[in-house]
Image (cartoon, rainbow, N blue to C red; front, side, top):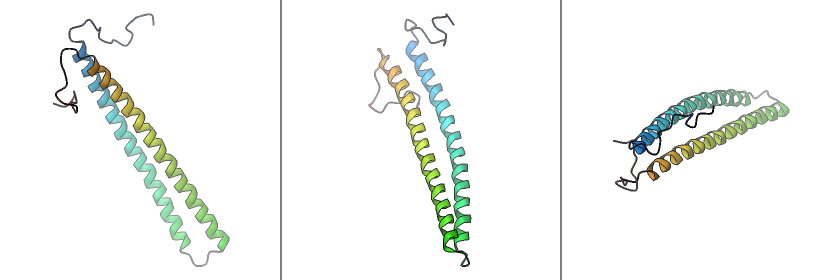
Length: 129
């Protein structure tokens, strides 16, 4: 696209520029909130599956007729599952940090452009009424 304003951003010369930017940040916040909510539900389903598998393997370990080698195999499988859970946890933390960074960056940008109004407090959040 050769259009200078391909993303339909408000012009800095617009008197309502700051308000429009804050409105856009509010929309971003809502999108990210829904994205996090969806991710949390998906993650919960994954963890539920892992936990059911761990429970089943734990019950298998209670079988007194198992040979030592069979017990070792079950324990190794349980370790694999807990390793997968650890990886998933790290992925979720990284995802959350990235989203937080985008939202904070957008808020800082919008607040930095507010020449005529100053935040009411250091904890001022423009989308809270």
